[in-house]
Image (cartoon, rainbow, N blue to C red; front, top):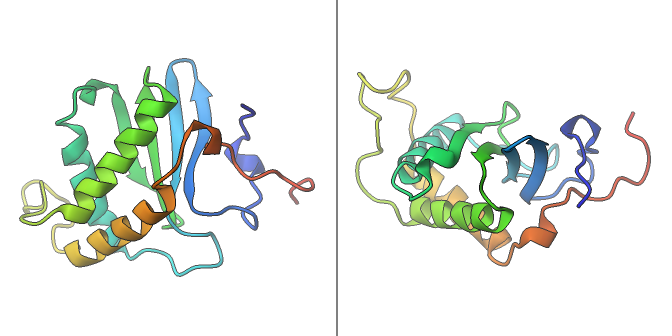
Length: 158
């Protein structure tokens, strides 16, 4: 599989999905693209914040929790980056699907969202987070390793 550096992505071609962004030794970075850049309304900060909290809490309970290095939002508010260590692409894709299903089904108190655990505990929105997760699950339902490649670049980015 050809890996396209994120600096060479043509955002005009980028669609929603899961993409292999970078491999550094044993660390793999996945681009979890939930919105089409520059074509769709981005996620709200409160939905992003809630997705982040629930995703991280879910990840900590998995058998490979120690292999999840980082999960955090993109500044563009179009998705997240997931960094893993020594996990297969197939496992990582299934893990992402399972985590987003967990978010879509989640009810209750948002994990680690109290004032002593969260730097912005007032900016959460569980209904929006659940809706974003449900929409993304429709996109990635049949995602597989062969789908991880970024869209083919038609010409040199400017």
